[in-house]
Length: 114
Length: 107
Image: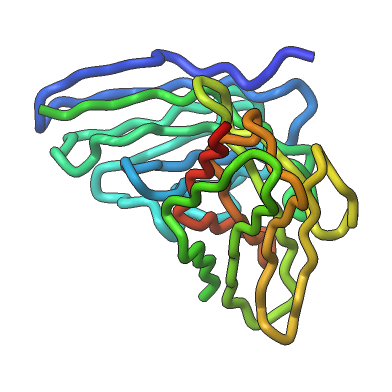
């Protein structure tokens, strides 16, 4: 089966600019996750969707980050405006369900904010 | 709040030696525990989960609720085990990852 796809793979922007990341999960997976992974740390959950509804966005900095999952399939994560501390790898993952299911990860997008 | 702690950032062993990667967690309910692995230039992928009680690539992990631990063990490490290992907890549908341990298996 095709894996989780993400684009772009790399992005360099200046602070205060905006950026968007795209994720296409595995077909049939109801749950989609966006993680932020800062160098030297583990993935930190930003937002979790169940189909096209938000299940958890408690760690999403809502003043600058937004995400949507239209039609319960693809998802986009946006940062506007970016700050230096947003430099990280942004991982998308999907799973069949919310509990006890394996998460399948995409390759990630490496964002550098200068 | 749920929390996962992996006390060792780096772990180095010789080939054929036993290896144990530590994971401690904090969660008030009944957690689901996982170990994920990331090999060089590959995606993060599931290694094993506690509910399956399985052995994958010679690795096992036992959930100890009394000590709130889920340590990953392998009796004889191989060079191909060199990778980054993350312990993860899912509680009430929310996932939390530890900061990972880099395992290096020397020849």
